[in-house]
Image 1 (cartoon, rainbow, N blue to C red):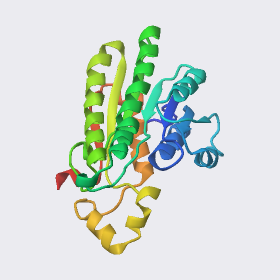
Image 2: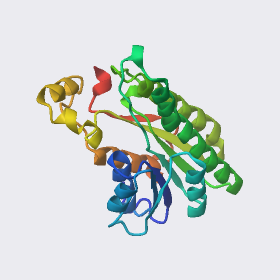
Image 3: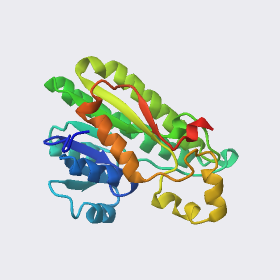
Image 4: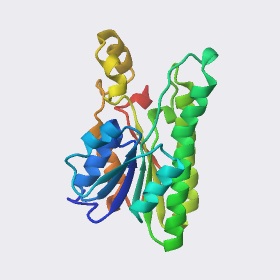
Length: 244
């Protein structure tokens, strides 16, 4: 991929305060993009975006009216990265309905609303664009105590394909990235537990956790012109987990 492959492009990244979202915002900036980061974590946004030039951030609930308004104020953008997500772990038999609803709200409904606004703007302007959805290896395989997360990521996979099918004729590509076990604050406790880490790594053929930067690099590629003939696909960044 060429240097500054996103030079002059404007991108919105949700879930931008930490983990894969922040890594993606940083990678797109390094590749020349002007980035708006959105998250509910003000402190994380302030810290993560402190050294990023030509970038801004907004504190908003993903997919909310406020979030949509912040993107509208940012102005026409070329790339939308739906990276915000939540994972609530419970045994299925006692899974709280509120956590089920919240997971589907953040992981499916919010990307739908953001993609709808993005698509409407691009169709009206007859402008090309790219939507990248953060799916998961769990779009394809299940994991214990992850029932809502697994269901939401499977739904996001099919949303990605449905949008690609409908928006392709309008010049809007829609692609997905499917991370596996990536080093984030959410799984820090697991990674620091030798027994838990060994168990988590068992299905991963490369024998290690992935880094947020590896996911961000894939997202940057898929959003670039180097991937101009890719739409409706989900690229797995899982160290071979799906092969197990």
